Amino acid sequence: DETETFMKDVYEFYKNSNLLQNQEFSDISLLEEITNSINRIKVIKTILKRDCMKVAFFGRTSNGKSSVINAILGSPILPSGIGHTTSCFVSMRGCHEREPYVIAPESPDKRNVNDLRQLANAVSDTNLGPNNLINVYWPIEKCPILEHQVSFLDSPGIDVDHDLDTWINQYCRDADVFVLVVNSESTLNNSEKKFFHEVNKYISSPNVFILNNRWDASAHELEIEAIKAQHLKRCVDFLSKELKCVSHDEAIERVHFTSAIEALYNKTKSSPSPNYRFEDKPGFEERIAEFAKFEDKLQLCL
Image (cartoon, rainbow, N blue to C red; front, top):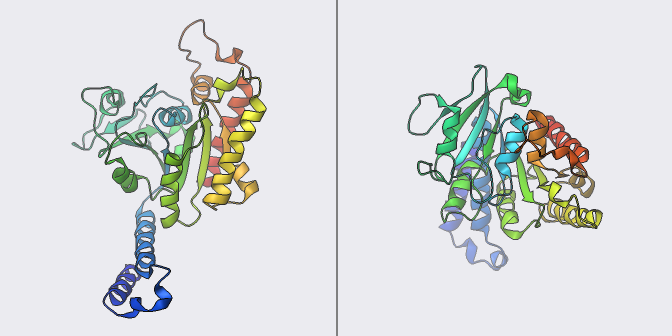
């Protein structure tokens, strides 16, 4: 608090003085730099006040953010599918109760976890908008990673609401770990990069993983290794050269090629139809191993 107050005093001092008319300040906005420093202090204060670490899952609509969390939890708890599916922000934390429950913003009462299908589903008539945060409490015995005093934050896809950037800044920007979920059928694009460039202004060297999800779609591609190399280079360059949050070699270890729906199936053995076998797709075991590798690295961060 004292540091923030000091920086605000510095801001007012320069703002009300004639020093900014000096030529040495002509090429750089000192007031802007001071403002950025104040914002960094605010984010750090928010992080220090939390009683748990926060992992924010971020990406475009229908990239599979909710599916990735479902796969980690080992249960299809969050609405997922094609199109815009998650209507609001959803925070997942561990609890010692035997059954999961939901607390919606309008009431402190515990609700059945199945209510998420209405509350957080964009196609539901009773869904909550992107300015809302739903808290879900999941039994630790069902997902050991939640023992680490951590919350998983699921977010609506970017560019689905004109105010969404405001809510993303409110709920996501102060995360300890970021998981960028990319649709491997396309590529990492500027709209996904934009948020992390903003985060980089407030958090020095943000902790970022990139998941190229739906990698199972490439199973029958003839040039799969060339496609993978192209995706990997773009992701590694983004982390090491643009964000400069890790070295080139460290960035390689932060990029994964996975299929969340296959990873969930591997834990639940629940297939979309009796005659469909995920195991029959080429590369299934490699993708399962890659998702497990990501989970291990995520757990090490916590």
